[in-house]
Length: 378
Figure: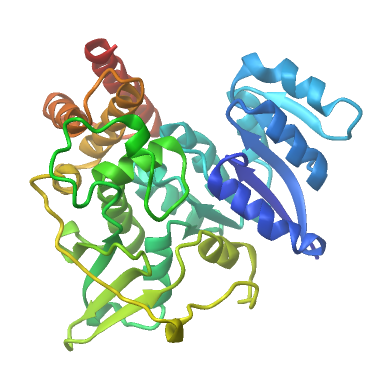
């Protein structure tokens, strides 16, 4: 029987990776819906190609472009938050949740209540409301699988290690494009977008350059694996071959190695069984693995993320919202690279004390922080 699949963020890097894998195994899948922000032409192209039932845009202003691009096809084009919410409430086998930023929170939360399996690449959803996501999935008989390469690696390793034997989890980071650059004040957006290992969207590329991406992943790991932040280490690993490690109480360390390719975690979500559709590492060809400590003085983002997790959910929401605004300002050249984390730290000092009891509280705090930060940046 074919698996019904919905992809949130289908025109982004993770969504396109999923579609490439599905294209090689069309007999196994039925595309229910493809959802994007405002890229009407690429969305329509993919929806036509895969015979999706729905193609949805978040931006209502681009709906006419989508409608025109779908003319003559059987694909139903829709737009807006209400339409996307209705699509996410349709029971399917797999949802790939790959919308970047807090914009993916509500669709992902709805999907967790209706899908059999949700593969989450939208780390911001887990940072802001992770425990609620996990509870929603479990309550409705579904489960969540991480699509970040680091969390995918740790999840694979943890299957073979009893939790009481785990001393700590290790997240690796490439170090980004400025790992060895002494002066960061004159960094340009173009330079920040040149990631040395991964091909990603603009926001995630900047987060990788500041190491905020690793800070968000640290919080995500706390949520996914039910551990305290003190039990999670971060290491710089420029080759991006070792994606995660487990330090065991007996003194041993287990590592998960794979090429720097998002097809590996996405494959494991799409297919029930392992398939030899991707190459293994070629160790005999020669390989060097190096590790370095994180320079927290030059890259304070991970320290801020640890503080946010210790302070509670509100602080994590503030961290994420302020960072998204600061990255946007940097990309528009309204903020220096080194000021991104300063903006986040200031926002955390102002807002972290607020109470968060419901999903609406998450959304309200997110909007409040964005309003406050944008007043000072734009």
